[in-house]
Image 1 (cartoon, rainbow, N blue to C red):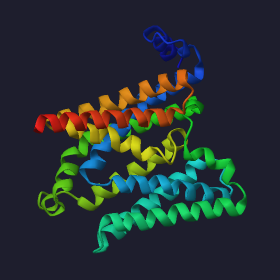
Image 2 (image 1 turned 90 degrees about the horizontal axis):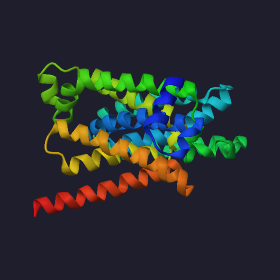
Image 3 (image 1 turned 180 degrees about the horizontal axis):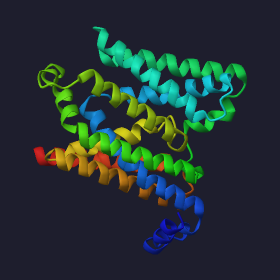
Image 4 (image 1 turned 180 degrees about the vertical axis):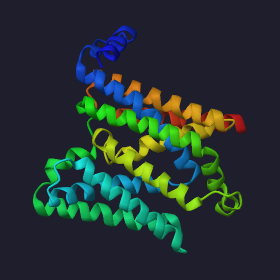
Length: 280
């Protein structure tokens, strides 16, 4: 870590880089924003924006269950509950004739209501309310290691399954005809989303995490000419939003997660305007 810190101090001219907590926050952003960008492109392609939002809401229930069971590490209970939640939601979604958005909304509403009720009943809601907005400045070295592992896992999954996921997003019947195990790929995908969302939620926040997943990919889709530029621009937009959001939040005393999402939103509207101009 000392070598990485020295490199950051050498290449970045900002005074805040002298502080260890800011170095950790920057490292976290350099890891989590590309992960979210790549996941976001797959989520947008598969029309699963509401799905990732529902997973974020389920974090409160995961926290509450962990508290009831006496689990000291809330990440364990959140991930465990989120994986079950994601697989169950995916199963019901594929078995019902209702629209996916309806099923996801039902699950999301139940999850957040149950979590709030359990935390309020125990009198511990204020203790965990920080999860709503997140605090990336509190990230530790071991949590950065978790993010690095997540970074490797997401890019490995993207590399080996991109074509299969792409066909699956177009038509599941077509994917099956080409020998794709659609259920397996789909379930691995939702488990990966669940794990990444849960290990990141304490730093990004329940209210903001879906925006950070979707906005860079949506912005890229506005202006990308092909799949390669779609993914590349999503990563660039996400990295820029993360770094700029961290710098601005430090100098203006604004919550980092909120600032990152605001910058991502500005980029979206700029790219939307460019798309309209090009079409005209």
